[in-house]
Length: 313
Image (cartoon, rainbow, N blue to C red; front, side, top):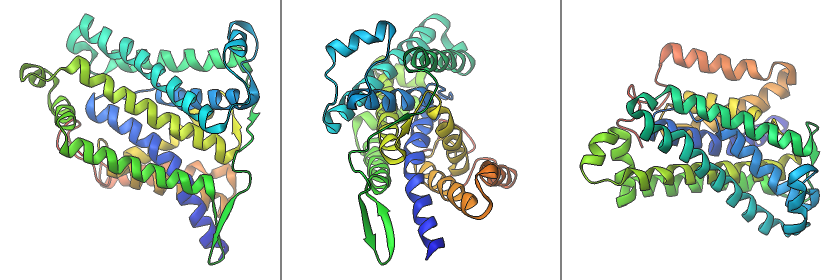
């Protein structure tokens, strides 16, 4: 029964990884580059959620927000504001990692320039948070407390269960949108060939920001649920989660959102079981060891395709 409980815990943790892995998948699948700002968006949402629950906005210029933003908000309002902050930050990133660079440098932005500029945003956001709140982990008062659901002797944490349900539901909605709506067809055409999509009348400058809105939303939901689940936030939580989520994305298959679900759940399960059997010191070894093994046997991942931007979703 104890082993079964650990499997449940691993799947619940995987629910957080799934949303971050899908965020990575969307940008690499649609825009063909690895968006390094995803950890920052995850972290910003979690930190803003903590601050509006009563943590405050520290010292310096952000201290002004203590006068403008009510403290000790209801957690639903705090989550909504954190979601909005992450989406706005993601749109800011889109403006300067894709639109501006694409307009100025054209095809040269396909890989290196957006990647480097997104890395710059990651470092900048992390250090703004460090300037405001420092580097020490901060404790979150979970609105769910220790609420659990017991089923046949197994305990399901309410926020952990929400993470898993939300991640699968969100990806299902994304899949329907991509496959059965006009916007989804436009997004898939951009993934295939943005220049051809533009010639066929797709408004790339209007559609591409939607990818960043969805990416920001996914990261925000994951960050908020992480804060509620594990009751701690800090400037580096995004890096810690994102490295594992990248492993899940590659394991599931680059550019495949359903592969990101499978990969995220697998790495969450591996992390928890590795800790249970061998301790926390080697927890990364099984995750990255499995990833390397899969890549040797199947370089495109479990459900991926050989060419990014084609034949996905």
